[in-house]
Length: 324
Ligand SMILES: Cc1cc2nc3c(=O)[nH]c(=O)nc-3n(C[C@H](O)[C@H](O)[C@H](O)COP(=O)(O)OP(=O)(O)OC[C@H]3O[C@@H](n4cnc5c(N)ncnc54)[C@H](O)[C@@H]3O)c2cc1C
Image 1 (cartoon, rainbow, N blue to C red):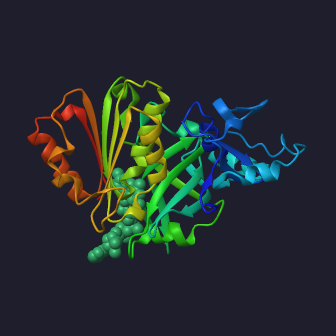
Image 2 (image 1 turned 60 degrees about the vertical axis):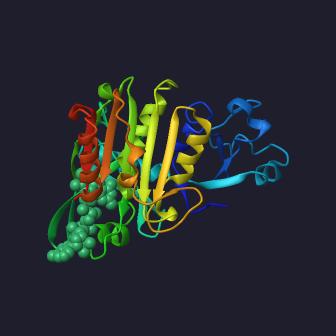
């Protein structure tokens, strides 16, 4: 049971068996994985669609609780009252402001953050962008950048890693309250969607660098072109710090054009390669027509760029987002 993880209605909607390969339904505040069930073959059960909250539709269905108990719970459905929605919409409309909705912890140091924002303040021509939050702590204003992990309707997601003694990461994780309003600048960077069109992509990242990569992966998958290849190379110290690992493993299994290679440096793990991927001489081929995205802290990014240069990869085929 994973009731710590929360998903928005929009994220649930993607698991309708058509957008993403897995099939989920919401029922009484929880989200169930019904992928393996004959009941929801092709995303439908009688007249009920998957990817939706079925609580109201199923209230008269006999034995529904027993039926749902047979499936694995993947998380809780984010519930927000319509009152909060209205207040929030007024604040964010056409402004560079975010309203904090909810966070939950996904590793020992990392949290998924969800904010409400206005669609107009984002650049929909790009994916994998970041914004700069303007945060005042004890009377001093700080500016810190965070990459966009997903945008679903008006909900924007970030991954925020706690830095020891870090002013802003500590403030966001420990002091931010629901409905707090944060101003931001941007969005900046990212890859134009037009550049990614019909390209194979190789996405290379460590730690929270997975955030903008996730946005890019979702975008590429939504294009629904099985011929286009998506390769994800993701490194972390430990297996438990590979964020969204289950999502990548599932895509790896279900989509023939998606390839996931996880690496861990501080433990041996059955499901991952050991060591730094930059030491693995085969992790970059010299094939052309691949667009590379590299995201993370300085050491990994610099080393990876060097390897790409050495392999003769043209700069115009590389996008870098460095976190220092
Ligand atoms: C384009 C971009 C995108 C980014 N995206 C993300 C993201 O998606 N998720 C994410 O978590 N982060 C991201 N970052 C990093 C983020 O912007 C912050 O740098 C990070 O959250 C740390 O900020 P902080 O205020 O908590 O730490 P800071 O207060 O800036 O401190 C950072 C570290 O330096 C140490 N330090 C501070 N002052 C000193 C000193 N005088 N001497 C020695 N050590 C010191 C602190 O202990 C701490 O560990 C991104 C950065 C960039 C540039």
